[in-house]
Length: 281
Image (cartoon, rainbow, N blue to C red; front, side, top):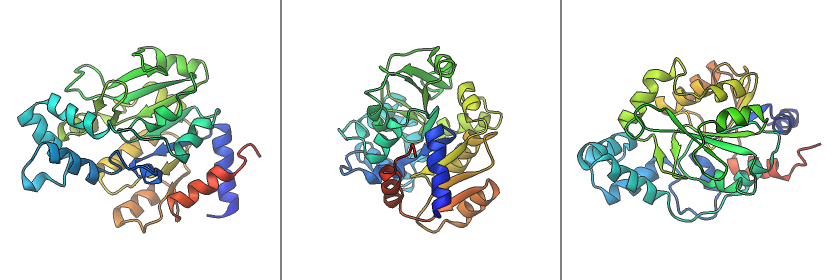
């Protein structure tokens, strides 16, 4: 990436104009790999505890749907809690994001709580996470304050008080184990997401006019593309994605349509550059 382009991203992070959108690939930066860092690793971990038919073993949504149907939702939740229970420490990217006091919105599209841990020293943030309709029939999200206490008005307060909102659209192991992971979970969300019903109003407000920076994300599946598209809808018309590997045909098409510029370098190199800069300059 050219230095002018990199400087633009730095300035955007410093002013809050850039929204970091972190996916499971950011866990590749951790020195400890105690929690699953990809859908493939997660489904392998879960099916080792609860066997499923062979044709579903590599399909996270299908495998978890089988467990939910035949072994109950609580069994699935316990399996997810177990998968993300091992102790792990926030990496350099988690810590860097937590240090940026001008950010208003950060999206974290995976189930671990490392970004929340990185923000533990701060109190000026709230957490909103996707919730399964199987667990909370009338709700799309659950909202918590920085201590992990359920707080129905924390989103509105976050916007009003000019602080940070951590948005985890797939749910999170902390503080109460909410997960969008099974096929039925995805169907519920995708049926409504085009009209933005599952997207919190505060997220819609905070994304307006801002750019997204995708880190540790792929756009291989329809779910990944739809989530990214609907979350960044009505934001700005320029975004970036750090993607060292050559994109697939579907990824390249998606990125071209929605003006997501590829930064073709390894994530660890980009993060090393990011964290070595004096971002205030």
